[in-house]
Image 1 (cartoon, rainbow, N blue to C red):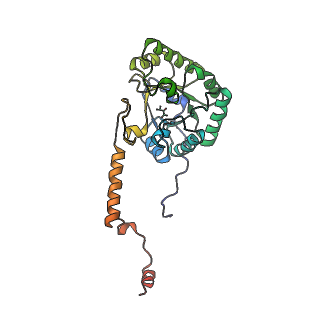
Image 2: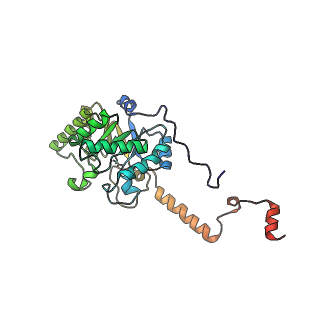
Image 3: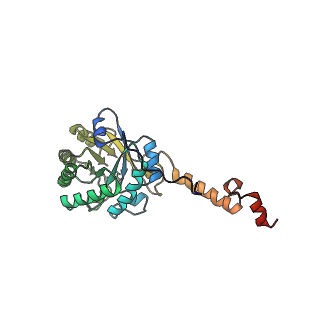
Length: 292
Ligand code: KIV
């Protein structure tokens, strides 16, 4: 065996895995749990924990790459992270984000980039931000055989025109405009729509008017499911105020800092490595080496 341990796992078997249609069939019977993941170990972890959908969200630009927003994320970067996630997921449906400006330019652009994403990463479903304005792109992708998840409300790729990361749908008119967007996405063939940062009653009304799934993030409990950014809920997001919709289930950055500090201490005081971390050689060779 290599000193580095076992070789990486082969791409997982996908028999019996969730699909867009199997999840849609579960609508109304159970809530859907979705979470982001951006690499192989986190994909293995969230899949083993039983999530229904793993999103390779462009939030990795912020929580993994340390950027201040998601708009600089490229298609090549999404492909890179999605390949790692696909390798670790055997049961959940993996959905990858189409990055900023890879689909807004029209149907041809969306088709070309979605094809590249699907072919190069192995992902089978994509997510796009926007309402009725991107309905033609959704229709084209679905007709081509790519399940599409929509995303309305606070759409981070459009935060510059939304005036920042702000709650949406706060007036009756804005709420109705969101509902019209959701209906247009459903009509275009989306199997699911993420509703981000909108009042619970708006999400509830939209969910009631749809026959496809709604997944809320900061949208209350009436949605068909919920999504959180993995690094936010595990306490891995660098210091700074988290959105109020985040519940932290762990504090891994702090646990990790403590573990590394202990390692630093043990390297310095010589207590690491210990005998059990070292490799032996045949005794006679060792004696020869020592000149005995
Ligand atoms: O990119 C992302 O992680 C997302 C979720 C917040 C829904 O779009």
